[in-house]
Length: 466
Image (cartoon, rainbow, N blue to C red; front, side):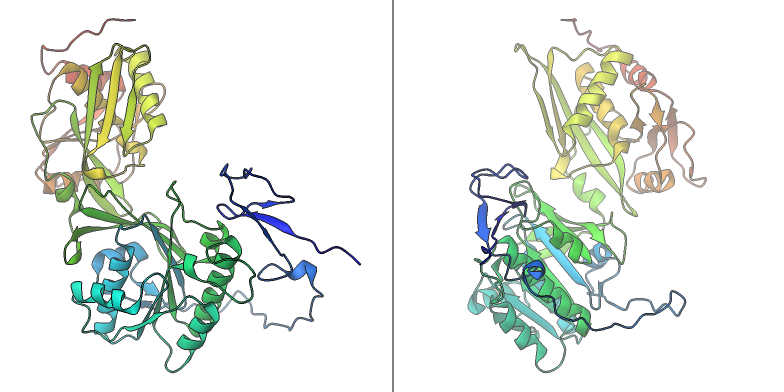
């Protein structure tokens, strides 16, 4: 008789091992490998006798294309992040740090949709019904017709939402608490998460109901569980924010029915989340215009221009290895900017500590912030405050050249709307607005920018070489 095959799966990343080990080779975590039976649950086909399949209907590529109907929530920031609202029959995965406000956001969205006449079902696997009602009362959502249940069994949830009228929106909070009778493993494991998500997605596709799944994240900020879950769903949203700040950002990472670079900005209060229609005013609200080392970056998040302050501090150090601390930006990108400043501009920072921070806890991933970062660094080193009515944007290459960036016109219009009359931007930039009243300075290379900043005062300090 053949010996039953077993497999060992990492519960953190989903890597399959042939035998047990203390450390996972995929993610490097310890004591996360668990033995599971491949004969049960999803993915158990090779160990069983395959049954005869049924033929499906084949269609041609030519035919009428119907636009996917959407369910607008009425929350403009949430609709912006999802591409105009929830698509019927789609599966949306929302992740974020504990306590960041995922359940608050979904409760407010459920209440808003319920007031519009939609049938909403909220299934909580982490809280009791009374606890969810307390949150609803705090958010002024207790007077809506949102249907509530506290259940973690996948089969029971599907049987409940299958009865009666089909729901328009189903919220599962969260997928790590689901467990199915078809999988012989504990809730939260890779097999259980994958089985539960697949069952929920299958129900959404068959009935046309929108399925919103809440996912926990790991210490690295990634959604816990197998990576295949993000491939299975139609949209992946990350709810970001810093506990020390009152704003929250809903960032779109994947969206099959809309853009993948949009953000929605919210402000956390004691009565829930408030939409922020103009995030630039929020990020620039506590700006000190006379402080050296501060530059305003005109960035883009999808179709929305965002102005944010970049803060840099360059201080002498007595240590052999200077410190490089970055908050809100890529540390390797900072190392490149420092190297370009030293190699092509003569700015020696080898004996200085460099601290870089994006104001408000905001995180920038756009290369167009290179020129703003370089301006803040030179301003801090020289002790000169940059002009208060100026914005900076442009990508810096390794040769020291400043490359043009996209959507220049929208950046300048947003800056002018907020009172910024001047701008430092790359030369040969396209899409320059003709009707703007502002003045901009075109920069061809980074040495030209450093010379302009150093020439604005006579207090530029010469830094001794090591």
